[in-house]
Structures are given as structure tokens and as C-alpha cells.
Image (cartoon, rainbow, N blue to C red):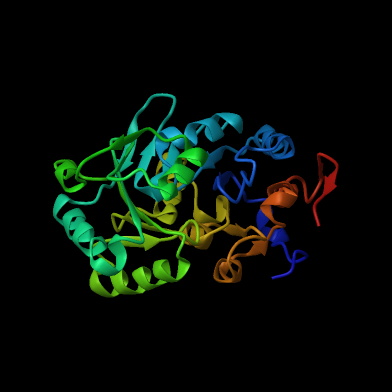
Length: 293
């Protein structure tokens, strides 16, 4: 879809802006750049509230939430947890059942995966791992997540995990895992997605950003899907881009995500969100010296 085909007739209806974090408002620097912060502030000045929807942990997402001044409940773990940072009220928590989590662990411990993949369990907003490998170190460098190294993940299955993540630098292995696990576990029992080529994320079947954004829009704010603009960059953003009246994919998004979007913004390193937000500001006014195309 061309940058010149923004759905002009719909932008006046927008009453909620929902933003992903990694690859959307935060790139290589792992920070929100000042032009993006200023563009979001101008949208808020128009009376449009801003929400964050991310695959990150609640605690890991908070600094981004604060950086852009989001004021709505925070959608994290790809929608498995919706929690208000101001009041700590939990609106929704959809963890994976203990029996299913055990079956997933059995699956991931098969010989073809065990030695080439790292498994993360997220319990009570804390990362649990068995081994502090290189994959986990890189993950911690970016997320600054609280971590607990345990002798056995299976021993932690007295509490339902919010999310399970399998990660590997072997991208072919991730694709093989994706096909195998989707063929093994019914889609009505679990939700599978990727927020990065080397991440395979497993959550409760109701845990997706589309359902979470629908909850914020319709239940919390009394809006309709046509009043929502959502911007994301990866497969875990698919459902919210589909739900939103205006669904925007970043220029760095995979081709399948770009194909389902209503509009494609420039890439994260080009501050594509700034250009996208210019489209809903009085028909494309200037934001930080940029003109909406």
C-alpha cells in the first residue's frame, strides 16, 4: 500500500491511539526519540488518549509508558495482562493453565529443540530461566527484566505463567518450532505469535493485542473500532491492526503485516510514527518539521 493512500475520510473519527513499543516507537537505541515524544504529545493535545500495547513485561514497559505520557491501562505480554500503572488495578490477566504449560515444556524439551533454544517463563512479572545463556543476556540487556535463575522450570509450575517464550538465533529452528507446535496444540487452547524473528511467544488464547485493544476501546472508553488508530511492526500486532479503524504497519514490518494494514508508515529508524501521526492531526499538519504525506 502506498504512503499516499492514507484513509482520509476515517482520520476525523479517531478517538484512541494505540502504539506498540519495539520496532514502532523504540528502535535500535531502545529509547523513544524526542520527535516521537513530541508528535505523541500533539495528538494528546487534541484530546486523543494514548495507550501502549506490547509483548514486553509490565515492569519492562513502564519506562516507555511514562516517556510518552500514556494514561490508559497498559497492555503487556501481548494482551495477557492489562494493568493500570496509576492504580495497579488489573483489568485482565489471562495466564496459561498449569497442565498446558507443562505440556509446552515437554514439547520444548524434545532433543531437536532442547540444546538450541532458550525457554523463558514469565510468572508474577518476573522472568524465570534455567540457564543464563547468551540469548537471555541479550534479552536482559534490552529489557532490564527482573530475573530468577531456577534449577527447574517444571518446579515453578505451581503458578500459572503469563507467557512462555522460546528464543533462538537459529531462525530456521524457530520456523520449524512454529509449524510443529501449531500442528500439535489446538489454536483454541493457546495463542502463538512472534514479536521478533528469533522469538516464539505462547499465551492464553484470549491473549492478543486485538482483544486487548477492543477491551480498552469498547469497555473502558465506550468507543468503536472505527475510532481506533493502532500502529505496530510485527506479527504480534496483527490482531490490533486488523481491529483498528485505521491500522498502520511500520515500514520495517514483515510483508504479511504490511499487506493487512490500511497504511504503511516509514521505518522505525526514520521515526515513521511521526509521519503517521501527522495524518490524523488536522489532515496532515506539520509535526516537528515533517509534513504528513
